[in-house]
Length: 84
Image 1 (cartoon, rainbow, N blue to C red):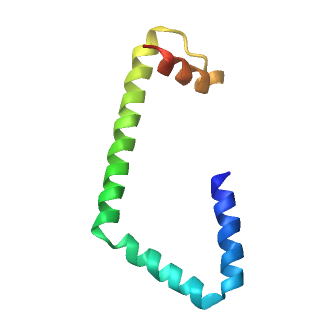
Image 2: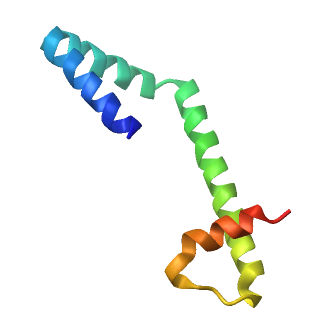
């Protein structure tokens, strides 16, 4: 939902400001992506995602003794995270 709102706002601003301003924004985003800070942020996001997926996999492996209802996988994951 947030993405859709951001897209609509960006579209309206882009349509009202003209293509020169949009080109400047695109150039700024490209320059941002080349910075060390952005690369560090992406490395941290990847590491956090990797850790989270490993943790989820280990919790699911630990729950293998219990019957798993594949119809309600989201509910199973929620129950795993509600445990102390």
